[in-house]
Each structure stands twice: as C-alpha cells, then as structure tokens.
Length: 187
Image (cartoon, rainbow, N blue to C red; front, side, top):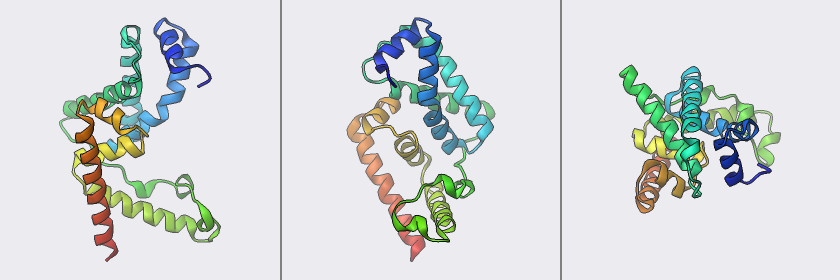
C-alpha cells in the first residue's frame, strides 16, 4: 500500500471508499486463501470472505489501530467460517491441494526447466495436501494461517487469542507431525 496502514484504516473508518477499496484489495486474497484451505469450497469461501469484510466495515469506525489489524481481520474471518459451519452442522473440510493448478505452485531453480516439472510439483502438492489433511483441525488451521494467510506467529496468537509461546509450540509440533507424515509416506 502506498499509504500507511494507519492512514488507510482511519480513512476507511471515516467512510473513504478508496481507502476501503485499498484494504479489500490488499487482504481479500489472503483471507479467501485461509478460508478456502479450511473448507475446500470456493463458493462458501467467497461468501465467508465477503461476510468477514462486511463485519470489518461495520466495526472499523470503532477500531483503533495498534498493529493488530491483520490478526483482528483473520479472527473475524475464521469466526465467520466457524459460525457458518455450526449453522450447517458440519465441520470444515480441508481443500484438495491436488486440484491446484501446477502453474500456480511456483518453481525455483533448475526444476522449472525440467519437462515434467509441473507433474512433479503437482504430485508433491498432492502428497503435502494429504499429509496436512491427516493433521488435527487445530494444526491445519494454524498452518493455514501461517503459510496461506502469511500471518506472523504473533498475529496468529492474537487471532486465536492464545499466548505467543503456546502458538509457537503448537506450530513447531504441527510442522514436526507434518514432517513425520511426509517421511512415513516416503518410506
């Protein structure tokens, strides 16, 4: 953003449509990504993302920026998803990462020049998705917030309303479980 987040939030809270548009453009993709990874339904993810932003705009006038906007936004979004899942009386499912187009994965180094790179990347993506899907829901949520939502552990702690040390430990354990599942599959 060319404007500072503080300025943009203040302007959006005061009703400035261009400031609100900047916020939506800056955060919609990440919010949608986190929600989609938790429920695996594109239409529902879009609906929840919109609902979350509607709630944010309703509360933004009273919001005081203290460096916690992202955590606040993601807490609202995950609460909207949780409320919807309760309303539907079903739990969120994880997304099928194998359905992700290989070109969206991104390649680095020499691998990108190999003719079968997209196939190999899609296969790795599928294995990773399966391993993540086997983790407890709380671990999946934390990993999604960290790696899809690109939140810092501090922001995740604020969003989940848990101490930073707890979130760091949970994140470490979740990654350890994921690594063990991937190693188990490779063996």
